[in-house]
Image 1 (tube, helix red, strand yellow):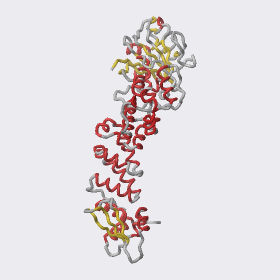
Image 2 (tube, one colour; image 1 turned 90 degrees about the vertical axis):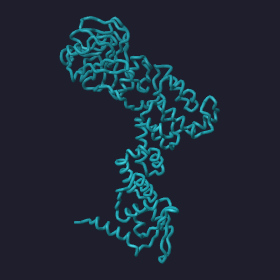
Image 3 (spheres, helix red, strand yellow; image 1 turned 45 degrees about the vertical axis):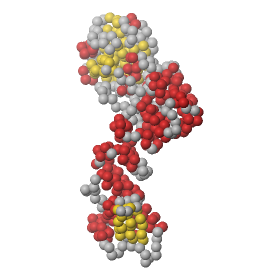
Length: 475
């Protein structure tokens, strides 16, 4: 059995620190006029701090002479706190303001006290977040003074990613170290439009090359090469495929000499020919922007909503690259019906959805992740009749999170775009997308007839896990 009496041991070591009789080392701390000499014990210092061990070993004297070292970068008040930690394992932050705590952190890092450095970073993040956000520029600058401040660096990058509008109004973006800039723009959750990120990166690059005139039309080949070298680690992190064609034309093409030739060619093709498939399977998806008016859906997410909205407005219409574009959310989606909430009977569908224009239906296929659906700019009715429509389309996605390669099928036989029936739920074409049956939709299938293409690989009947109908209106 082993019993540990650390409390008494710590107190005894603090008493050794306060005893002026047996010291063998003096430590001169601070700079004029704020200098103080501390008395200490070499054996404790060497075993508690790798930095002090190295310093004392290199300055070692004979046994009759006191060892003396200088620590000009640490304030006496700060070192007093650190010394009590070295001797007694005691850290008292009571009565210390945040700035004093940061000075202890910096001093602990200089003395290679990794345990203390790790603790103080966690303490600041958990207890002093508001102060650090208010003094962000100072915290950010401090965090990149040492490679040991990784948690503070992550805090700063998180804050910049989540609240960039707060930062760029009060913070000189061009003063960011390259490492910090790269950490920021590689994040999926950076809450900035991609064109704004590109413009800030260009601004940062110009600040590092102050001889360059901002207008790229005046640049020589050497100027472009200089800028390319400056931004070589940043350019691969810009999600150029997320930009609109207008943004690409006016904001990127003037700088095409900065980009890899094949990348620029692929970008140009993506805007010129919607049928071209992306050659690179590693093109990053748009960033995960948080939108306040999130859609109330259990079936789809904002990425799918964005693609559907582009199809509705014929923006990048049927482009193989549409899933790579930045979120396009011009519509409000009002939930009219959810099967799992309201019921799956045709009566419920017609009661909640008839006579309401501009609806989109989403269907989750049972037993798979597959999502089917259709857009109806007209209305639904309970009559036993066909409806003539011009702008209907149906679609499918492999899953909620697999948005690459969706199938879009537009109506080709406009006279039979929709089929109305009191015993049918949303039905597009004759059987292109049909939900029918009593109670549990036991007659559902997709057979290509009146739309351009089939949206499923099979014509077999399927069951549904859930379905939703939304009415959309312009924001």
